[in-house]
Image (cartoon, rainbow, N blue to C red):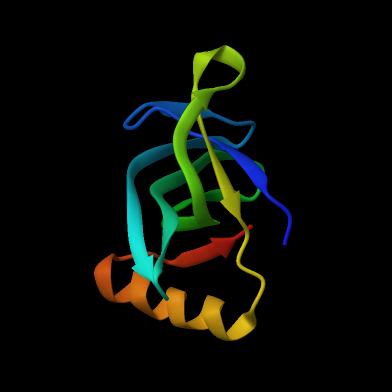
Length: 110
């Protein structure tokens, strides 16, 4: 699987979007199969949508950590190199682990 660059967002700061905003609450470095997986936890609120209002807590999984906060990207934000998790069995196992640790309504994989 190809390496990808993940740009870290500031913790606790609202990021505005067209229909609402999201907030990254914390990052986890979760041990999995003798490696570490990067997990981003946050909340999203859509309160300017034509379809109504709502919100959720989410986890985004960029992938296995190859290098953590090893440089700076555009706008001076930290970047990490990750390897996306391709295997469906690994994704399901990780989703169960994340849901056991955190209250989230969805888990998204790169």
